[in-house]
Length: 103
Length: 279
Image: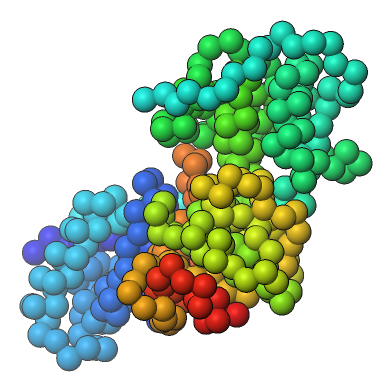
């Protein structure tokens, strides 16, 4: 299996609001809400951590879910966000200019 | 489709007043310079309660009149930045504002609506840098507190201010003005009117609650979670700029706002008793 690396686009604004992630694409002002699991993936999308490690180390640790199912769901989720250009995907670590991680 | 509006001749009689007028909305004075007496009269009438000749302008516009390009309010404005210069364009006007020097120009025909749009866009840019915004909302002050009623056209913005009790002061029935002041927010009156066709009062008050309007068979107030409030607020904020940094600033402002100000859904029927629920 090829590793996938994911990184948040620099053309987004995002905030955790009462435990729920809300994201706005600065390209077209579209808004996205993420559920709890998706929020964990989004916050871990630093361009350096492989998706498989995010799923194994964060999702499976925190939520009672089968690893294969969790990976398939995570893959579908990141593909969806990538299609909206708010997440970048690569088979190599993604080099990025500064990304101010937010609380 | 263009909308016919009264056009004044750019060649009016000789005027005797100053060429410069200062229109102060939301506590931010903007100087408008025109040598056309017809346009000057029009500005004096339209912004009568908002003229502030002694104020020190936050920015200056020189207005150059063109003969063509009737009002095209049905078109979307394009607002973009090159360096420190903002360009504002729509079928009926072009304008530029150098945000560093705070000077600019407007080219438009002699009508009030193009100027209204330029002022709204300019204020939205100035506010975005300070945590404030313009909102598609009616607003009114009662007992020293401001209440905003956000909604799309037809949601009841004008209706709710028409139903306001006599001790309430209407700030606007169309475009509300919100500024961050310390840890709170103030709502200001604006001359930007909807169906009411009347300027709001030129005063401000601490913001109490933003209601998102929904027409319903009965009156009631429902809580709204911060996430939905932020989404609803962002839907109603007037923001025109094609600029990622400013877009992020507005997003952050909306999120900060819903964390500090009461928000709720207001289901209402056209009935004055709604104000018993509001405050």
